[in-house]
Image 1 (tube, rainbow, N blue to C red):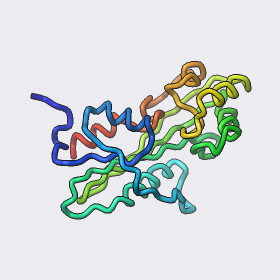
Image 2 (cartoon, rainbow, N blue to C red):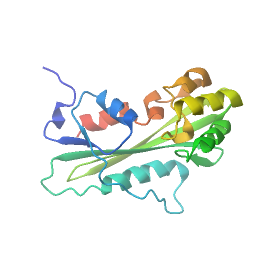
Image 3 (spheres, rainbow, N blue to C red):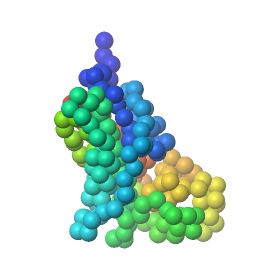
Length: 196
């Protein structure tokens, strides 16, 4: 009888992310996994890396922080997401004022959301990235202030969650994966895991 990703039964799947959205999205693939954030890294990007390659670099950095011995049964999944607009990278805001500044930057514009993902076991590592384009309607200062105050999007790249109020009222269109904008391109991940 068919069961998705039964080829991974020999592994203990580990999501190395504290993001509740990534936990929810990986859970959509109907696999058992645990969350482990015990190997944090300094997310320092060396000069010369292209903006769209930053999340892939950071996902690899996070994955490499997990020491895996030859007989280790863990399969580690890491990810990083950034918003790119006007030649700038928008990561997670420092505070509410920074979140409002980011939302003013993306108001009425199209931004690129790039997520880098690394899947690693004791023998190999596979890295990939996904990009989505998100079109925002113009947002008023009142709308921005209300969203930031009520939803406090300080843990979200670009200071917004597409699945929240701001996505419902502000996003006019998406080109690419909706789930990538949430933080994990699950269709691409499923394809990698299916072939593992």
